[in-house]
Image 1 (cartoon, rainbow, N blue to C red):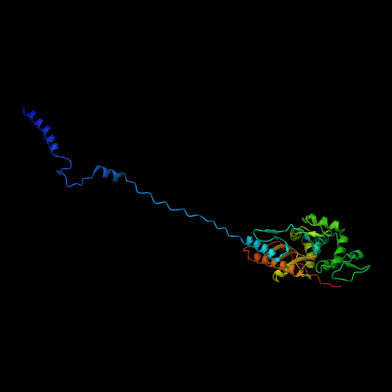
Image 2 (tube, helix red, strand yellow):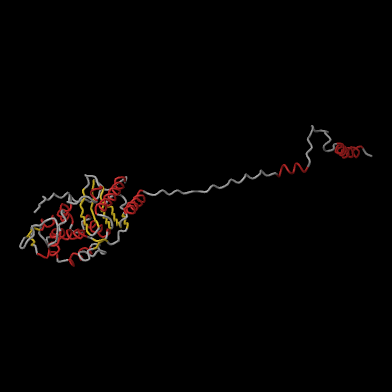
Length: 336
């Protein structure tokens, strides 16, 4: 064999011998090793962390607390229920960022008694404001006008100015004075047409003489907003319905600083009071009717309702300035 061919054969055989001598895992040409079984190694590589234990979902409870207005309604309902009477309440706010209204049995019909004098005097005020009637015009008594009341100086041929009759009918709720004004207005039909023209649609005044708290509130709201003759009418009307001889209803539940323009009516076990209330920047209309309990208890219920509403109005955080007419001069009280 030639020398070159022998060398080539040696190069091929030498690596083969070395490969046969080095057995995997024998420790030759390597440091100590840890033998891991294929099964264990495979398990370690494929293992997935255990899923976290499911946490029980807690029930979600939404608490809705009643608003101050909701609480007011509930309290008024409780006052009415505790009284044992039939009670109608109608409230319309005229100030505040959100002007709420409230009606609890507000559409229920009650005997009006002297509450019919509210639209009557508003009609007179509108006529005075428009120039159709004069405050100094003299209106004369007719025997058919006579009815028991505050004054007893009516007789054949006696005449009184419209201002005098308005003060008697409004501040003192005199019946004969009101009858004279109704007759000169055009009678009960004219009074009802006027009342219905601004929203007193559920009322039948004079005969059978019924009304609702909602209707009385509608009258005062229209007057307060200047829709029944504007400030001229208000300046004539408000003094004759302020500081009246009957302040034991709505005014009794209010602070002395409040201006309360209102009219009461009481007869046959029914007490009514409806008012336009202003104190600073707070302004609202409230009407309350009570039937079925004695008169003193009826006025007490109205005063409690008035006080609770005032408490709510006073607690309201923000108010906008309402449209309030300038304070009218007080008319002197004249008694005959």
